[in-house]
Length: 482
Image (cartoon, rainbow, N blue to C red; front, side, top):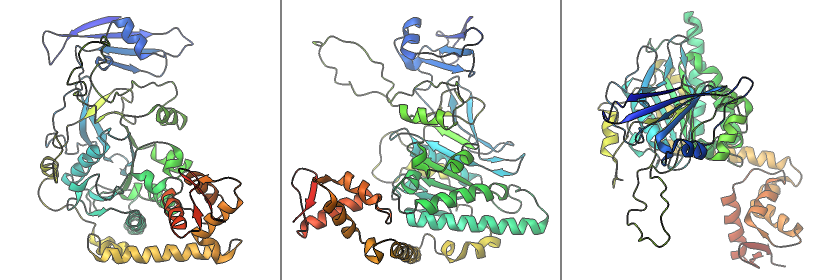
């Protein structure tokens, strides 16, 4: 069936909508280049395809890309409706795309995931969510594990702004303690669920660049994974939500925990531009229902044009709008409907803090943790955002070093086994041929000692060469200096 309707934004253009169906017993699949060829469409960004996961697909052909230009959000978009939702952007058909911040029907805080490759618009999406939380009186605890570079404007507009893995762990510990304190307090009051703003505020703990904290080899991976799982279990019914923002969806980059992934995928899942391997992982992990298929999100909106190899080069070959913010809301009622987030911040880079993003946060101070939970939050919460936090971090590091030393002392080789240079010397001594840093890292990781990062291995190898204990027999190769 084919239906042609007037385009809302362009009265003289038309939008063609096709409903396609395969015979019973088959599942509909499509090949985008073949579909474009059959419809004689030279720009694949003009086509939107949605499937029901079974036999039917809805193909919409627009006169131009409907998501090419997005406006900034309005104040009304940023305020929660009676269903606990905010408007985050628009679907390709112009309808508002909503994301739930809180479920008023169950009294549940949300558990969320935001995925996207580099340059997909994840940081701007996070900035918008943080600004919406501030405007709605939500207490935002935000760990920016890119050293604070992902969302620098958030400083001063969230209740807690952490910029290191160590402080992120401390933040998760405090969040878990607050959730347990609320559980005890609600039990004493006879309450079995959280009520928005009555009297406690909703809390969202967000870990940006979460793969840095939870990936294999990360120094605090085990504790970080455990704390996120515990917070997801205990926090939901007492108004403490958790969100992980990551560049990939692979299980190994999110703690390697099936329990954690299964828990988070029941919440709000946003998928920005992805890689093919990420898509396979989404299907394998059940984040995308079996049989569902998503239209790829290109990096650029500029259509590919075949020109003679001898034609003059165009000066604006690379001058084309990107697709930052384009996404799928996998947990929404329209998981296969492409949408795009509002334009957030200035179009061109700014030399300092972006004034448009700062304006999104609005005036005034952010919401704070209720006084009744301050005892549970301990001194760590009291010194957040002050120089005294560095003391807390140093205490945490000392505790971790002591734990690692005790663990290493129990392993074969005793306390000496914990020294990284000795571990590397042992690996090089056992090798028949020179090794590169990656091979050394793999062998050291398998020796039963504390986990180390590849950067630490490279630094230690360089130090061994400088000290004369090792040599570089070839580019990128290392061997003991016998």
